Length: 342
Image (cartoon, rainbow, N blue to C red; front, side):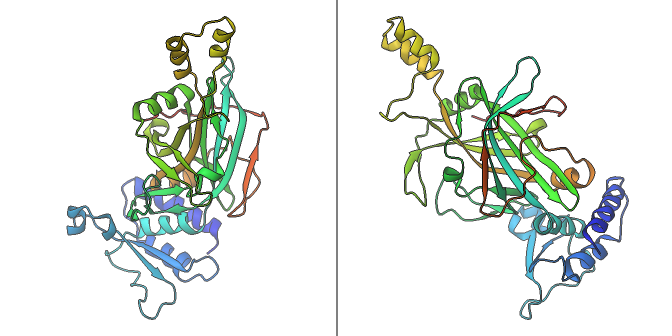
């Protein structure tokens, strides 16, 4: 079975499932494409247990939901692709998302035109990312992995290096876009933006002063990890934010502060108040998380044309960046904003 045939079959089966009908084709699709096919199958195969009404579901233990098997293992062979021990629809869709889809994550600094509502890209970085049904905290080192399925996480471990120099200033938005590519389909699966004012308000409300140490550079900086809800509350993104400092260690003046200084206004209370409302923020995108159903729906049923990311494919370690100044139209999307949670 070819990938295009699998996508067509998944679309038919999901339509039947959403209509409330039961289908016996999910085990066949799972076995044909992910178990029996050497051409497409990955070395690892994910099985989602059917926990409906079970003791595991009652205990609410996520680690009881997923099982991972290695193809061809003689010590731990694959379970039979029959019966009701596993949810075959979720197993098929999870393996599709983990094995057959490539993902690009773009972080951009944009300015919105007040008349056309288009966003002009000031700076952007695009990287390849990979889905995981588990997560660990980037805020606290040496934390254990936690199973998150049905949510998949696209985590940027070296975020402080890849997104260095992404600075949000007054009047600019921090924008995020996650793009999935599966066979002939290329679609946005998550997009959102947060204003400088929203980021700053959330940053000032936190002020934990927690220090983060880079694994590669060993540089230490104070970061606040801020969670953002996606459009219509679908999905989440996290940004690590810090106050930008100048070469002299002092926060750079905003344009209005500089104007006040030229007028001879040097009152500390006035200037500090003005600076506190205009300082620049370093922004580092750390992860995006989405429910597997949201990803499958976007890929199979409701693809949307990407706005931020380039068409160029990326190697796993490659980063593309640019200051193209191109304008993108976000008015056609349901929503392009995300609120920063305090």
